[in-house]
Amino acid sequence: MDAGTLVLVHLVQPKEKYWGVLLALGPAGVTLRGLELDLFDDWARQQRPGAEAELGVSTLFVPLHRIEKLFEDARVGSVASYAERFYEIVGCDARAFLGPRPPAGGAGSPN
Image 1 (tube, rainbow, N blue to C red):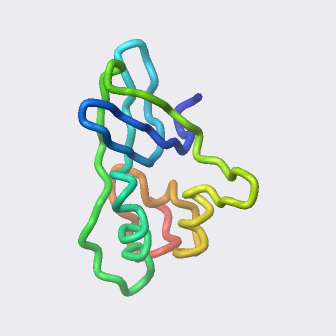
Image 2 (image 1 turned 60 degrees about the vertical axis):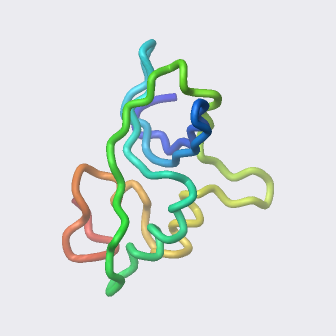
């Protein structure tokens, strides 16, 4: 997987799941810009124009020994990817909202 790929990361000790954009993958671990998977729907809804943002993404480094699985965020049969779900909710690409700072001017504005 290359930097810029949207991924799901399953962690152990403690069990956690994260979604976001892969920044780096190396022998020491993974650097990700995203959020806990449980917060995804609430976060996505807050990215719509006029919604009050209370949740945000962060940059996270996870050491390799904590990573159980790393998946590319992709459609599986009729089940939409998280990126597709985000597009349905907000109407634009999730990568625009996973940058180092929130987009200016609301949904659809580039960084």
